[in-house]
Length: 346
Ligand code: DAH
Image 1 (cartoon, rainbow, N blue to C red):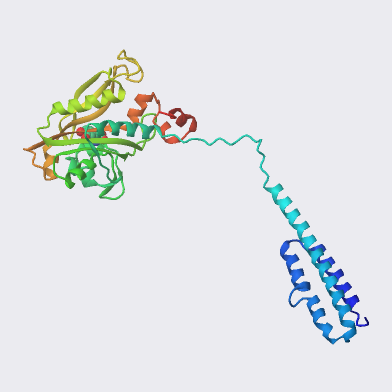
Image 2 (image 1 turned 180 degrees about the horizontal axis):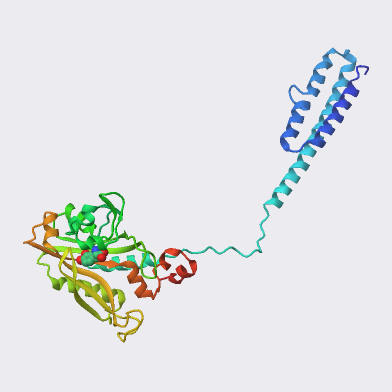
């Protein structure tokens, strides 16, 4: 065989061996296979050239090519298998899990104490037949003041430490404007509780925060009297603080109610003896309330001769502080886990 076929095939074989050595992944091996054994590969080219040989040389040349072809096939297959194994081995090692490692515990979140108290209070009032209503935190001065019988120049307006957004917009100083919005939207009877955040430009200290939360309550219907107010607020206070609490209604003043009152709770910490929390009085101020002022009812188009009602405003932080003995209102907003985790499961 003078054509040098044997030498060329050996050269191809050496070249393939070198390339296989260098191949780093299966796709490179596949490329080598295509280049040598493929339809347009080197061996195919050699096989096609057999036709040019003398007839008596063809069978031997064919045999030789086939021999190299099957050798190359098995060399490539072998390298492919070996590389596949080492890729797998590397992957298994990289993804190995140490099943003896202790698991990571998932920290369970908890309801914030203010959420707990809000939900508890709303649940009590819902059972008494109240719906829940909400309103905007940025409020017009009309809803925050005028509609509640607090005209411009009224001392109550100055005392509110209002945060103004513009001449006519404020961050609401109380949840009472939701009363007005609710009554504007529906005819009596109305029975709603209105939770929400309120804002005052107070300097933070143990009992003041520039934002806190309230629940406003309102019940307007024919024939509602002060006795209904006393019943509803006594019921809620006993349910929330315990049936054995002492309660007293004390005359007070709010522009939007007439008459107005405050509800006091017998001090939970000294049983009325007098202590630091109740400032030696034996009583804790709980909320403001009263019979809705006729001017407020007329302002929303209700006939104040026919309908009467009562309203009240609850401070949620205050309730949470009293119930859980929290000494500083700022604790609710600091998000210190040591504080928050004390309410797990409440
Ligand atoms: N809006 C009052 C405040 O923020 C609380 C309040 C008092 C609401 C008496 C009422 C009420 O509805 O009748 O201080």
